[in-house]
Length: 113
Image 1 (cartoon, one colour):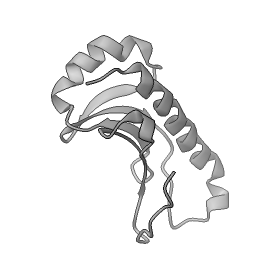
Image 2: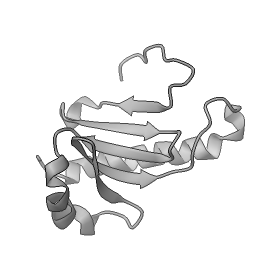
Image 3: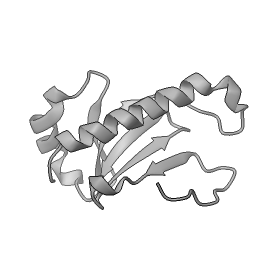
Image 4: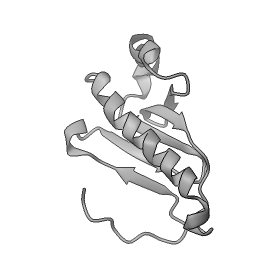
């Protein structure tokens, strides 16, 4: 993992870019809106195809959605408040990390798009 860059106080998304997922895939914990997405850049037009091909393999809490020009494999998680004390939100943070971990491994299931 690359050293995190300095972020502003209002930065609410944390991105993970594992090299083995390829350049067009990244995982974002969108803390302010309560979800973790595996985004597949440039795949917005393939959402229906992805749902048909892989939807039955995903857990019931996981959806495939259009996200701008990307397709997103999405898991809802509790919202985190970056201004609140972290020790009061540890379980919520862990839920986000578990979702990111799940999406990392699900990315291997979803072949080249």
